[in-house]
Image (cartoon, rainbow, N blue to C red; front, top):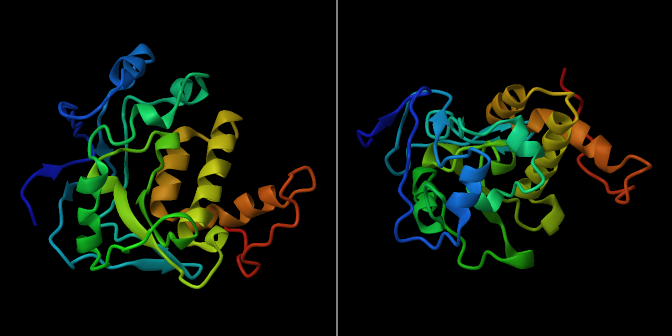
Length: 220
């Protein structure tokens, strides 16, 4: 493992020199957001092929040793509710897309040659999503791939997107604390899938009748 260790209390500022910011740093500053990462446990960048996927409800979870998840400590509920807030302000502010690709090697996973549109099978996912103030550092990134041979909407990263949308709605409505949502999705994103699915298939939702994994049971 590499020696640059980052603990839960650490805050990492990464200069954005050499990247096209288009005024995004100043936009972040306007509502007090900085480009920082704070992980849920001490973290070292792992070596190749040492990370193992875990599973819950038959769905993949990252290795907590390699991807503990983390947050941007300058992000709060006020930013989430700000009408000007957009994830573009912090996306790739600490690590760019090429740098994030190193996580494929950690998990001994091949990067797909074609990974766009209907052929997309992998996403370099923010375990705690940027929408919820997730960190853009590598300790919050993992390759979420598969399953092949299914519709795009049934890929694992699309299912997690539904969970992320559900949690954002709950936090904005005050039914869930931001920190609880951040820690919960980092621990096991699948625990929220039944509630997210129920929200999607509710009568008032335009996607009524959209079927998901019926074998999942609500987690208390």
